[in-house]
Image (tube, rainbow, N blue to C red; front, side):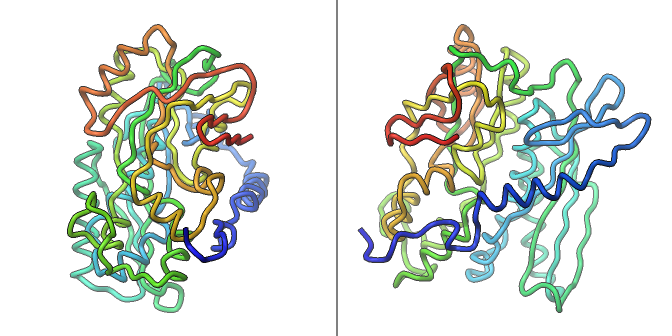
Length: 345
């Protein structure tokens, strides 16, 4: 165990509770809605508007402070994948199929070698998500940006009668999960604090045979998994009651779906070694880890018990990521993570 004091996400500069309060304050001032076609339809991970028999779905997100590690290693070919993934994985949470994407790249000075590498990642991700990149914006902002920031917006669609809201989630439903590829693109303020306050460097070899010939920084830059194709395939075959992208906030993400049930997690994935490495190096408590990181669970699907086996079969055939039932829905509220005796309301 590390001799460092216990580290938290809040002490690294990101307080999840304060962030939620700030977001509510922002949303409270944005009450304007248009008249006519395009009226809002709500949403949890993604916003929706009415468009005839369809709902158009918009998501916007960025890569976050993971870009700082990319710049330290001068390795920028994967952050475009992160940017796309953080958007399209949110879109599919309402049952929508991603169509198109635009990016926003802000940088301190133009550099064609750097921008080419960003483009490579975006192209790879667009193929994985089956979307068209139809435009974007690049801004040189030397007095605003030190380095770069990358964000994007995805446009998706779903027929109104196929929207997955989470309201159908019922006690007895099964919770199935797809394994993450690693940390994805959340919690990097805490990640960087752990590395910066230790005696380690991003260029040091990762101390585990599961990551042969990779530096700590390279493992941390493993791109976010994109789950579009397997989730769309599943939606065509079985009834789905809820979909959750496990991002910043960790297990607390389940509470976005329906608050009047309990998400009982009793068979989780074993987190990848990168998580135990960070926890031990930073002396981070379990509760903090599971409310900051995905801890091996990248995406969750909630289905009726009677279609569970079919859903597992479809996902195992379509996904390169491990799939398993991780829990079930019970009466109550919040998230009950049994193996660590943790609860999140």
